[in-house]
Length: 332
Image (cartoon, rainbow, N blue to C red):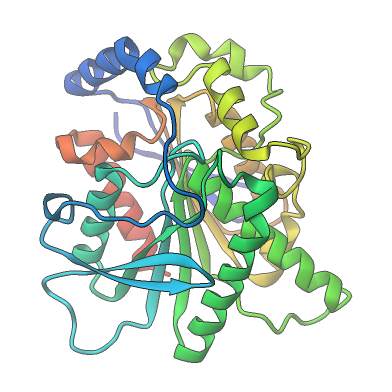
């Protein structure tokens, strides 16, 4: 079936797709068979920002340049076709991993693809502190401080910034930007904000409500080959720890979404119909529409959580999703 484009409200455009290839069906079958092992892997890593050292094969001929901002490691992807003139657009990518795992090979290949196909932008992976060593109560303010420093750098360099992330990484990007906007609005009594913020956010299969109270989670659990209600409750607890799971700093759906529209921050996103996190992602998307936040979204029925990360296996849905994302980000 071909794409169907619908307008929600006046600001969010949603592309609906519902096909599923035979190979994707096979992948989802295999994932379902293995998910007990996937969900039970223990997170073992050092405290603080994790040092990343991916193999060259995962960088697809790109190289990495490491720098540190507020004790958080940032990795800039340098493509083989690096432009002579420094780009004025930067995409900071926050990789998902249940708030407990560093980026995977799939994340590196996705970022390498963006770096090679978008020479007008610098792609940078942010290595945030992770649970269980550094859950949100100990790391949120730290990440927010780094965000402020990165945005100040961008302002000085004249760069436009986009924050992107998948799953728990998308949760962090949405939460950090909303909290920064809230702080700024409070300091200026709702007046003109002097601090710089991103032009857009790209949220792939975002986790937007850590209470996990949405009844649609249980209703569609049988369709999800990767996640279960038990898995997503456990990962949410690992991140929010002693904080209330409804706290806006871990559940961006409870933030003041109107601030995104007031500051002109677009929110783009991607959801799948076989992902138990998609009902909350769609609720967040709809609230963006209610508040006049602009954005492009794709909802793809019969696709699982973060299906774009199957890109290394050359599945047609992942390639189409990747192309859609690149086209959206090129416009920013």
